[in-house]
Image (cartoon, rainbow, N blue to C red; front, side):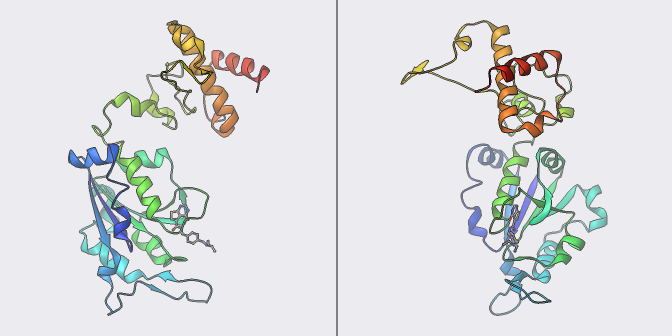
Length: 266
Ligand code: 9D3
């Protein structure tokens, strides 16, 4: 997969994409990340990429010409042929649809993905309407620009490329993996899955400054461990993300475990 990032801060991406799974995926040739300096597509002496908003108001707006010309210079399919070519052009903006794991799955099927980073007060609307295929936000908070969003999307999408993560099963069972993808591995698996938050993890020492690991985990009783993990995953989801419980199919055992934990809530 080829990922192109269009930004006025190309140096921003020295670092965040050079670690862990993304680094290994790049080294293995599973993904190539090309960072493009938008200012290279400005025409004037001052390499201007922004201008004042029509209609007045605060701040500056990224001009359309450098962005259109940058994408046109990259050999991206025209909008009509994007689906067939498996190319996708994404504008990162605070006004976009919210990025989530199902959007990540769609983007991971592309052969080429272009991420345009917004800056200043915004991007000329014609970029979103006539050049990009979609406009994405990474969440309901105000960032200074799209660069962090692009880094988030690169990380999330790269780890979905087959071979990028050592153990294929582990990507399939993470929190937030959509339930469709979990067909064949129902909510009774030992890993928290199917849209619940993950269960708590512990490693040695068994007693750290008097903070003890739950006894059941050292019991060797795999059925009890499975029930404890499912129960704690349900509890944690109820406490931190009750919205997730609404779109998850709970088994009879889940309902029993939840009812029991609701009785002794801390
Ligand atoms: C007056 C309204 N502005 C807030 C000060 C709107 C605004 C403009 C530009 C808000 C944010 C930005 C810059 N943000 C992004 O480009 C951005 C973003 C975000 O702010 N939140 C979540 N995801 C993203 S992706 C790009």
